[in-house]
Image (tube, rainbow over all chains, first blue to last red; front, top):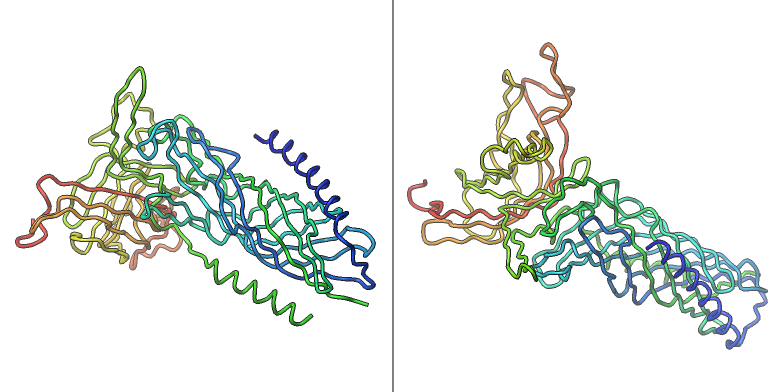
Length: 245
Length: 232
């Protein structure tokens, strides 16, 4: 899984670079006369995320969710002559997965039954922009975690926040300038992230324990896995220009 | 500049309002199914049904799952155990300890409809020759790996009650909360010594903490538990 992820991230970065170059070629440049700091907001519209480590006897599927992240953005270009700079995103960030907890879950077979996990964080994410390709990390402070069955409304579980830790993700993406005016710039943002630290304190992930095919605890194995998600998301950011002479 | 910062500030403020936190553990964990129906294909082509009386997630040093198979009604409450009787010699030591697990709780009165009990109270704590002992006046206690934990705070939520005019035949619900042992698990009293913080004149729970993340339970009684008229 991790090998595939590396290849996917590399391919994604290449595609982004090409997109970014073509977008910049087609956009008419407004040549700035003073240093411009960008301050504004970002909104990601949709995301797909999945836990990359399943506990023994369990499987996972990707979770597609909407409005996974939003907040404020500051962009500080290193110079006005090229597209290099530092970006800081501060705001809300969500990640999740679908879990198939055991083979006969939900009175179904072949791991067809599932439920959804979703985690919400307050995130501070410093990144560097290299000609439209961004690279950085997110420091995620847990706000809440929730697990629920998609069809059974009474099964709605809120996670003990003390079992979640401050999680770190590494992220690669792109900020592609789509529109520019004298007031500011609109960017299309795409981002892939991998939560290297995992989400839970050691051995505290309720769906990380080993189980048999009927959901019974597997007493011959005591390894409790963590939830280590990867995610991909798409959105926009609008940055107002603040001029310094 | 000022207006832009105000705009960004408003966006952040709205973000926090929209994403208010709910902290657990609370609610029913979707994994804690009480009935597993397994429809097996060829060569079996059969259906197996596994039923638990309770299924929960405990936290301490780690979060293992615990199913319980047997249930019994008590005065105003429910007792759920993993095994009926003692384990056989063929069961490994580790599993045999788990087989002695039980969960029981007392309610102010037998539940006759959906409700929530969040008043948990430990009864008198006594010290005898075998160390301290206690029971619950109201609320749950649980024994895991031969260690007894007493409910300190949390809630027992009754979601379904099956009854007629005088008797309750089944109760379903779930519980989450924080539990504590009377003394620390590894404390050994030498020459009558007491663990730090334990006062004989006013004994309280000073031991290890355990968080029950979600125990879904179901008690059934064929003869029913009387809830009106002459009690029991």
